[in-house]
Length: 287
Image (cartoon, rainbow, N blue to C red; front, side):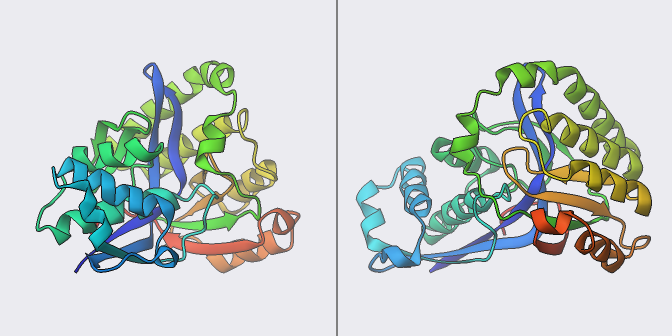
């Protein structure tokens, strides 16, 4: 028996057309999908469809006969919201792939895991152990960053669902191109924030990317979230660029999350985002 866990994401810190192609930097949080792979009879009610496909893809990468998947059972535990832009699928796929490799006493490096994940669907970069600029369609790791700011994320979950595949079928190229300059500015800002470990600049970069996303997949109450950022002097916000979740960046030494949640619950935002949580921003990586 082998086990692995992969974190969820509160949308993306940055996403858009960067240096000629769509790329993203996921926003990993301390919320996990844990998958167990062991020899035994498969039971469909114990797994999600992409998990079985992840086993097959991993066996292929390891050059193990694919029919082995019939001898493997999968069990998982995950409370990550599905189809909200929180990387639930990536967490399932990556955890399953690593658990499968471990079952055969092997390990997957970052590039192998990236290729397995993106061979099944466009993927987040949460399986990587550093915040990473990632081509989520080609599985290419373009840039990695060694610093993670000490921030909590107040997560606001919409009742609306949006599957990753459906998002990528939308006509977005015109808006992506129009926002390329804004994303270039956000990326430069993000890089400078990483180099100087500047939380304020980090938040500004994330907010600029979130603003660009409004032209493609608008979030209800965006202006009210901006008002909360000003009212509570928050670093900024993140959004699921291909989903429906919104997050406010919160300094644990400076901000009172209960006061912010109360302000949301007394506003129109409560109607749009009835589920609310607080999680920690982390580096990411399968454990």
